[in-house]
Length: 241
Image (cartoon, rainbow, N blue to C red; front, side, top):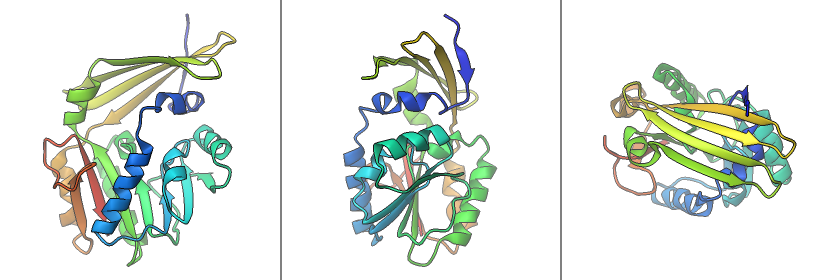
């Protein structure tokens, strides 16, 4: 059956929550709260600048929280899912200034940026807008997670609404690109295809941020741990203060 090609996160919000059902969002929230306690970060307010359909933010125990995503369909789903949270569209590379304790940018969102120079420019922007009592927490997937987890990985499922989908993952090690193809079939018969490309940036470039922005404190951890990150970590989580 012919599939209609669409940009990433235009059709997939219809299946996103089923696609991500195995993600331990509650555990992820607990980890961030534990990090905040360990490194003396505030958690009373949070701004998730790549919030997707809002599940992580919904579970995160902040008194005030705000969500933003570049995908209007994702934000529409977030508003339906959690109408009590303010959600809006925007570019994570240039988020608005917000009076919050934490800016959050998780689940490999920055891996969608092809050029590391654009990530560096983003960090320079965050350097300008972060207040003295604020912190920015973000993560990046490294080659190890692609080699160990996502090579030739496939998944098929159907949502409660009867929308079926198939996800196929592959990793182009030479070009350091992770490719996810999602095929989405609606009960009426139409099938759509989205291709998602994540770019795996060098560990050394990420670590150099602490040198390029010496007025800031950077903490580099293996994600979901308190161990210092290294070149063979699966993911790196960065705390910028």
